[in-house]
Structure formats: structure tokens, C-alpha cells
Length: 269
Image 1 (cartoon, rainbow, N blue to C red):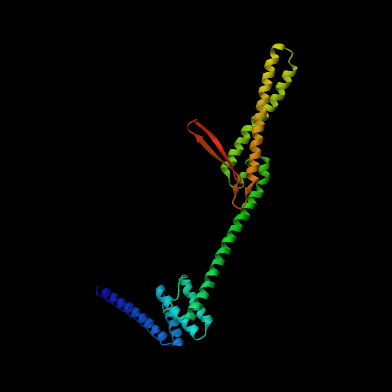
Image 2 (cartoon, rainbow, N blue to C red):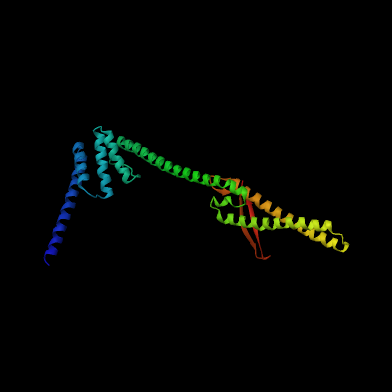
């Protein structure tokens, strides 16, 4: 049982010694930097980074700052750039203090920072634009595939552009008007013949009324289907392909005072 506390003591002593050793190295690095021993600063900073698995971000930034400034001071600007980029990888908003850095080093760092930020923005913009183009291509492909379907039957093309609710509504409206419209078209023709062939004066008036009613029903229903078909084409073809938004919007509208439900149409140009 005594071995467990002993192990903890050993680990504690080791970790304390490691932290103390690392702190001593950082202190030594700062002394060398203030003494303008730039070559030694570069060597020691590289060793600290290589030997330490994990360093606090603030400490790591300070090490790279002294390393980058040392490289710049001995005219190794490419190495200095690499060190300063490492800082920006950690914190893209980091700024050099005028108290600890010369104006030339600050200007050099700021140029690197400006270039670093612009490259990142360009990369993000390119990725976003690529994603947008891909979405637009897919949207246009679906739109193109639904053109003929929309012409053949109202709402059929809307399934291609993922407007399923509107597609079902237009499908049902088309069926509800065309099917009885066709029925009354045949009935009108039949009743017209009956009316024209009727010789009994007492039945002529009734024959005419039956024919006239069927005639009006046929016209109303086929006209309604034509309106639905035209609306379907207008809604499908006159739209902003980029946004996918239709030119005509339909929304249900209820009037509780009249106890009625209607459809609200809005046009966008």
C-alpha cells in the first residue's frame, strides 16, 4: 500500500521538475532575446517547440514571436514569415505590441497577416461559390427535366423541383375539372342531338334546358382546367432559377367572419 503514495510522489516530482525546466527555458529564451543573441534564440525556441508535446497557446505564440523577430533581425525573412504564420494559425487576430517590437518588424508582420487573411477569405469564397454552382446545376437539371411534364399535365413538373404539395394540389385540381369537363362535353353533344331530333312540342323545352345546362357545365369545367393549366405553366416557367422561387405564390386564406376559405394569389416580378 505504501508503494502507491510513493508513485504519486515520483510523478509529482517529475511533472514539477518538467514544468520548472520548461519555465527555465522560457526565461532563458527571453534573456537571450533581450540580449540580441538571435542565433541562440532561434536554436532554443526550436528545441523547446520540438521537445514539448503541448504548450499553452499564449506561451507558444510568444515563442514564435521571439523566433520570428530573431529571424527577421538576421535577415532571414522567409524563416521569419514561417514563424509569424504559425502565430496566425493559432490566433488570426493576433497583433504585435509596439512596446516589444520594432516598427519594421510590426510592418513586416502586418503584411504577412494581411496576405494570410486574404488567402483564407479567397479559399472560403471559392469553396462557397463552388457549392453554390453545384446547387444551381442540380436545380437547373431538375428544372429542365420537368419542363415537358409540366406542359403535359398541370403540376407534374413540380414534382421534379421538389414542390410536392403544390404538385398534388394542381394534379387534383386538373383531374377535378378535366374529368367532368370531358363527361359534360360528350353529354352536351348527346343532349344536343336529342334536342334537335325532338318532335314532341311538350318536350322540346326540357330537352333544350338539359342541353343548355350541360353546355354551360362543360364550358365552366374546361375553362377552369385551362386556367389551372395556364397557372401551372406560368408558375413553373416564370421563376427565378437561382433562388428556385416561383413567380406566383398561392396561400390559403380564411375569413372567420364569413366562415369561408379561399386562396390568396401573389405575383412577384
